[in-house]
Amino acid sequence: MSQQTELDKVKTRIRALAARTVDRGCSEAEALAAAQKVGELLEVYGLTMSEVELRQERCVQRQVVFTGPRLQAIAAIFLSVIELTEAKGWMVGRTTFVFYGLEPDVLMAEYLLHLIASAVDHEEGAYRASAAYRHSRAAPQNRLRSFRYGFAERVSKRIGELAAHRRATEEAARMPTSAGTALVLVKQQIIAEGFGELGIRLRTSYTTRTVRDGEAYRKGMEAGGRVSLDRPVGAAAGAHSLPGRPR
Image (tube, rainbow, N blue to C red; front, side, top):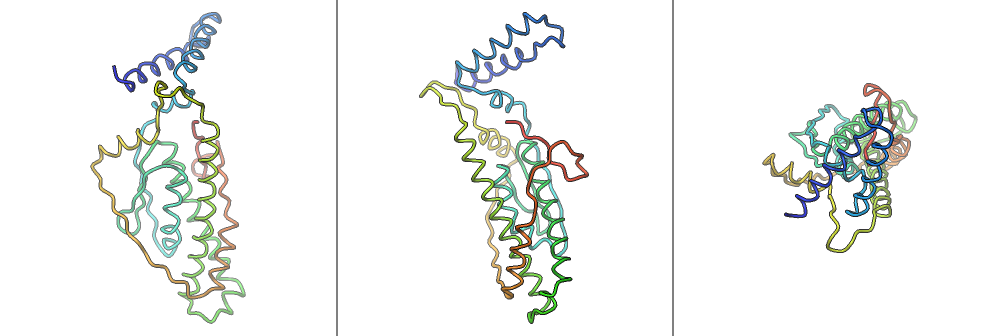
């Protein structure tokens, strides 16, 4: 029997035991015995409940379409969103952004893009009404493009810092396992397997961005620093909520 086959059987048993609760018809003694057995199995196999439950998450593919000048900022921030959410992502044409991965990750990525789109619209509107915009000698198109590039640079850097912090936190919290014998579920493997079945081949493309108004770029950086990247939990989807992430 392979390690992966054994791992799947162990996790199936743990999930079944975890479902044995009083409100599902078990006696208190039966529920307590099941909980104790779950603890034993987790310890023996070096697992956490989040790793056990991860197999129950399904991979999904969702796409988001944006149009207009905001695309200049959104496209520049797209890769950092992928890094933070640990999803796979690609573009179809110039306006469609596609995410693939575990459903909570994909929903988080979609939420972030909508949040960023709303933020760049709001901040650009404020910049257009400012004295800095009126007094610039650069062409209006160059002012706004430079502003969007500055906005994207700052937001991308902030998201990158969040991703680095998340990786460090997860690494520090990771439980030690017995060398060569522990059974470990790696989320990336689940995504890779599912993505492989799609038969999609991705290629990298590069875009050159030239800043022609340094002051507008700095104003964009300031605006990018004001964007709230907190993850609200429990609010309605229409209110730009971000669903809770199982860990």
